[in-house]
Image (cartoon, rainbow, N blue to C red; front, side):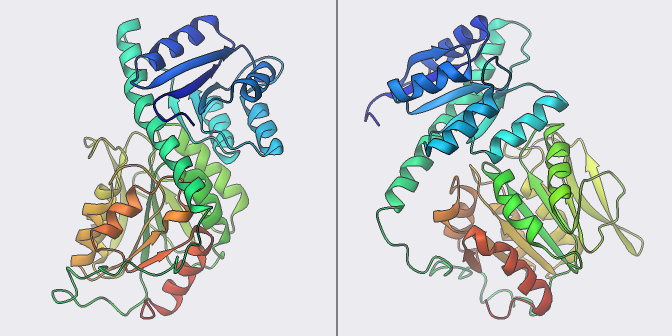
Length: 367
């Protein structure tokens, strides 16, 4: 990859949108659009000829659509950061979740601005950080492949130092698992949730950074392949063992006490750290309702949503599990928690489900 220029290929069957996306990318510092393609078949040829650093990809195209192109890249063993340009429809949500499973890095929504200038700025704001994160992630994976990774499941040396004198961690099994995830989340969740047994003894509350419709599609896909029941959370639901509740995109989710019962509330409260749903928002509520009987989990994602929430959980005596750097698509959210000294255990993605089963069965005393 060039050191000063990031080479982009735009694949879209709409001439108007190819021009629109290309102009937005050219406005992002250090990005150079090296070509465009009208469908996946032509896009595949240009990928091999031009060797771009990343591509933007439409889903619906003739000859070979976006999903077909991703499948071809997988067969060829080509690891190429891909950002999907998705429509805000149920069909678009289903296709996008499938694209993420096939290896797309992330997606942005087609802008809905009042005019071309507003739409252009919106797309630029959405694309720029994801391009940077995708390329940083690729460099990290390439570098890690050249060195041995030792003690992947060991917690950072400074983990929990802030709180070891102030709060005695609980030795009792958690009553709820509260999980936050962002970029790379659909793939990560598909490696965790389907591995939980049907009799998993507590509810799992999930915040995945996604817009409306996309979380419903994600819940449906996960439920299809899981022994536990997976639903998009609805206001008033009472968290039950063996069930996974995914916060609806575009809303906030929290847990409240109603008499002797606990209930999920879905609200229109403002975004926190530009996130709605927000991990901090959920974790703040479970710290209040469940106290030290919480296992907080932070998986792959950009930014630091969840760090403040984890600090509140730690002050309640709860335990925190984070995904390790080597298995993250983006080591942002877990890094923030670990570097703040809040992580009790750091584990690779393929062991997270086992960590959850062990924790709810016998507690986290081994940590």
